Amino acid sequence: MVQALRLATVADLPAIEHIVEAAYRPYVVRIGRKPGPMLDNYAALVEAGHLHVLVLDGDIQGILVLIPQADAMLLDNVAVAPAAQGRGLGRLLLLAAEDFAREAAYRRIRLYTNEAMTENIALYSRCGYAETHRIEEKGLRRVYMEKDLG
Image 1: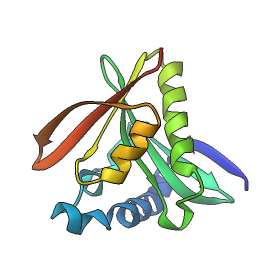
Image 2 (image 1 turned 30 degrees about the vertical axis):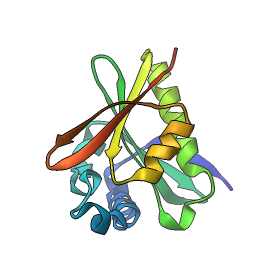
Image 3 (image 1 turned 90 degrees about the horizontal axis):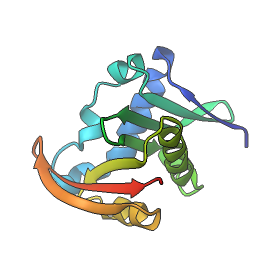
Image 4 (image 1 turned 30 degrees about the horizontal axis):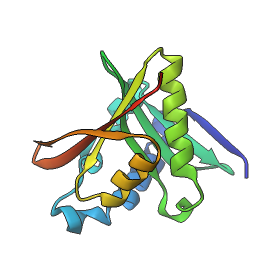
């Protein structure tokens, strides 16, 4: 299994959008609408240099969106193609996000997820993230979590 994590390019947009659609589609019924990541502008994220892709044996199998903020790196999105799930790629992307944050001299990484995505909240908790607050934003009930990188 040959893998590489690299910055996304415009040529990657069809694969990125396919992964996002497939990874988040199961949550539409649970949430009652499309989750936030299904509404994002991935071309703009690629242009800004915020989007990385995980390439496995020549195919894009995961994405990672990192947005620098004043006090923490925001892990805005992590998604793995459904066919590649269950192989530890999500955890690999989380670790990569933490490494990128450290390299950028951040002491903290922050993320949010929909409160209906209980399995994601559990995964993030197992990976050392602690819930900081819950809020409704853009009509979505979000759970914010942080991890100290110090």
